[in-house]
Image (tube, rainbow, N blue to C red):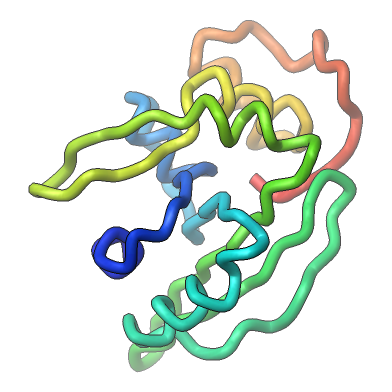
Length: 150
């Protein structure tokens, strides 16, 4: 998927559990979360379709952002791709993204600080565990109490 985005010159930032692993704190995740610009949604969905993903389930509203979920099914297995739309709340996180080199490919990833901010905003049990594993003692210093996607 990242290769398809890079080939098309589309900007993105990997976030969620995959970003956590890239920042040195691997754990199991059952989906891929990618932060994208709203204007790029249609083209990114086309790129996802070229990689075998099915049509989007449509807009899923959360307190802090809107998500478009796309699924790839292979036999009995499936892979969920959540496209999180950048908005005013996520703009600073978007601007702080960083590059990783992985398997001869450039990956755009939310910064560790941006990821921690997203985890604080979500505030779910797994997010609090992730914050602790990132070296942030707990999520009790959160300024946001809402629940966006990871």
